[in-house]
Length: 126
Image (tube, rainbow, N blue to C red; front, side, top):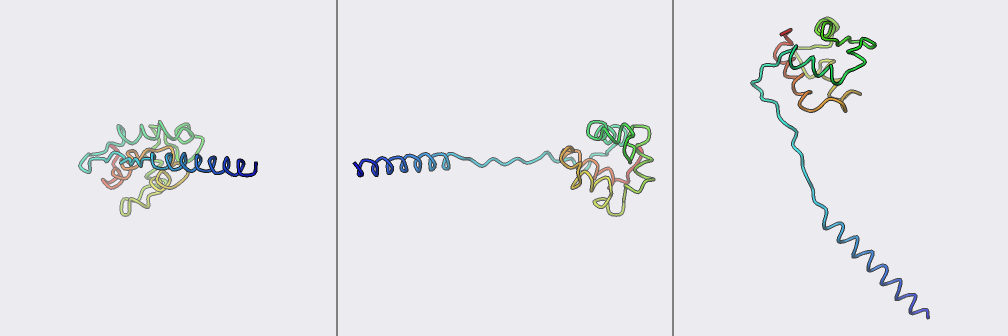
């Protein structure tokens, strides 16, 4: 009787090990390369940057939080509010917030690249 229980346990363990090995072997690793922005693309504040704010920054667009990023106030709020650093673009306040701050989850990689490229191009009001 004891041998039957031991045998059943061994069969059960063997099935579990076989199932686990099969599941582990069948896993595949997928990689995802985010889209890359064309480094020669001229970024327009009005056409490229403002829509990023509109779709991702509702509290700032509505004016309930600084910087005010509505389409009519965003440029002045960023440039006069100290959020832009054209000398060291990656240290710009607006970029650090979307790259590593609490807004980083909502802003896509392509949008982050676009904001950084806009700053590198001189943060023009175009």
